[in-house]
Structures are given as C-alpha cells and as structure tokens.
Length: 249
Image (tube, rainbow, N blue to C red; front, top):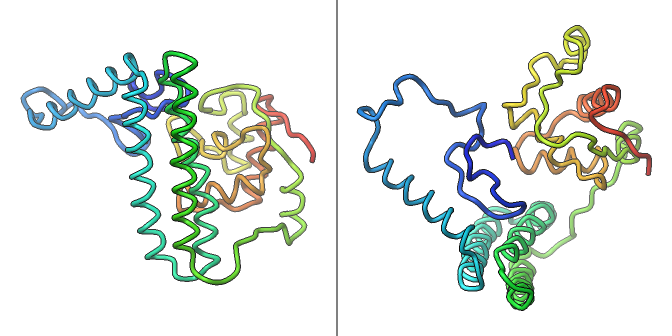
C-alpha cells in the first residue's frame, strides 16, 4: 500500500511485484549509480517488472489461472512448513486462523484479471476449488486437540473488543494534524507515513474489526504484538484529530 514504485498497486487487490517493500527499512544511497549496480540483478528486476506489467495489462483467463496456481502452491508450501513447526493443536489452529483468510483473499484477487463476465465466473469456480483443496489439506494436517479461541478477559480487552475503528482518510499517515507536544506525550513522536510498522494498525482497520482483533492480526503479520493500551491511545488520537471515527459494538 505504501510502496514507492509504480507497480505497488496498479489495480485494487491485484497481487503485484514490488522492488522496495518496507520503505523505512530499505533505502537508496548516492552509491546507486549504474557503474556500481549488478547487470545481472538489474536484468532480473527488468524481467520482473516486464512480467508484472504484461500480466496486469493483458490478464485474461490463462494468466489468471496460472497465477491462482502459483498462489495455491505457495500457500500449500507454507502450510506444510507450518504443520511441521506447530505440533500443538491450538498453536497450529491460531496460525491457521490468521493465514487462511490471507490465502483466500489472494486467490480471490486473481478474478480482477478477467476480461469478461464469463471469464470471471470461470475463475470464481477455479478459486473456489483451490480454496476447498487448501482447507482439506489444512484439516488433514491439523494435530489432534482443541481449537484456538481468543476472548477478551481483562477490562481493557473488553473495552478494546467493543471499539471498531473506521477510516475517514485513506493511505498511510504521518499524523501531521497532531501537535508535536501531543505526539510526545502519547509516545507517537516518531510516527511516520514511511514506516510500515507504524501504519500496520491503520491498514488492518477495515471498519469491521475491533481494536482487540487488530492487535492479534498485527502480532501475526509482524511477529510483534503491540501493547493494547498503546494501540488504544493511537486510535483515540486518530479519532480526536479526525483521521478515524470509533464505532461501538
């Protein structure tokens, strides 16, 4: 969503290549001159860009079907690794609850490459079949034992579970509206639109998920679960300065 190259998001929900992903972690320097760059790597990048542009602009049933198979196989490999690494049933199930919707959304996204209603219908059937196969494998690989459930237990968790952030402004945020003194008081002084880590909570807010649910999703995506009180402070600040509204469940 915040990648700084033209292939980052040429169409909504299309899987796309990106040469620079996390802009706050990777950067260019004055040494990036032609004589210092690898012709081999530059060739690989050119091929990647060309393949991405060709796929998005030509699309159609064949390209979309091939892309769906690539996504399915990638998910299958990830699922095999996950099954090998999670022998305890609840740990496996928790990770699966995060990843399965991600895989399904990726598969659904290839339908946007269809040219006609018939192609879209055919692709819908194909992606449904792949999702069923993936779900069947996931259940077959599941360790015996209880499934994972997460319910609010503390007062703060119950409060966070009732609050649903709703965006008013799209894109990544720099908190330019928030006074410097307020950002310092609320531990938001370094908040940057260039930082993916800072903006993860904003990207997970879809107008349906609660702050409690967003905390869990961030933990699985980034490997670092934010403190709930800090997440609440962020969203209340975003509401105060008209970036978000906060609905009550």
